[in-house]
Image (cartoon, rainbow, N blue to C red; front, side, top):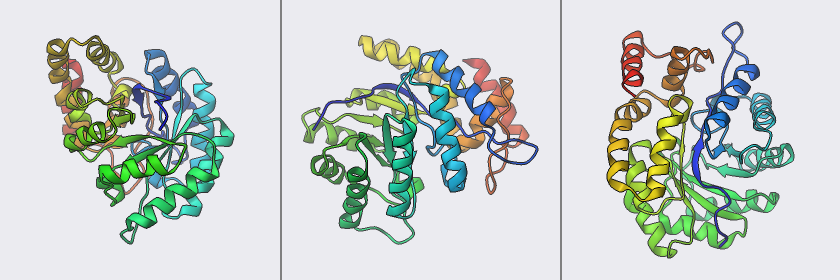
Length: 294
């Protein structure tokens, strides 16, 4: 099991769409990524759940992956999200990300039929063996319909040399403690549940994968630096100031809420792709008030 290749605050950009025709807006995507990199985040992760990857065609997915990697231009590590119903599709996207210059791929298995542990292992094995990049296992049962136990996550890391890290988004901090316990702290794992960030770092998380820096990067990074400095009392105060907007983003859907927030800040990234709908006006005003309080 190798050590972490990335750490800290990994920012998840949304995927902008043009209002005129609904196509991917690569100019707005580059502007958002430039803003995130300039803010000081430690990595960029396009095509995650916040990036609406599930609603993109293959051609659009490749366009977003390529444009994101060009915009980052290796200023920070880039983690490209890989998710497809078929293993063939996941392998194809992972190979594309590797050719385009990704540093890590984050693989989320999704299914219509419930996958057995044997099928999940086979899926990750096919992706891992198809590329030389480090692979992050992404456990997000709320969106994928697949819930991987800590023991299965560790099995994947143990069986495939380039599966080297985990993103845990189940919302159960005890799983993070279990990952730390079973590997003596050697397995790099990332928190993917915004309201659990404080507890996740206390459990030994290597970093925090979040779309929140799209809207308030300085506050997220200040909290992370306080955690790193070991000032838990101050970190707790900072986190509880962050908690209301973090909860709002989760409750209202990351693409929907983040896009509304970016519009409030003067960066038009269009609307979420249907069936997702724009944030209702009353909730836009609520988000505006939460951001103003920060």
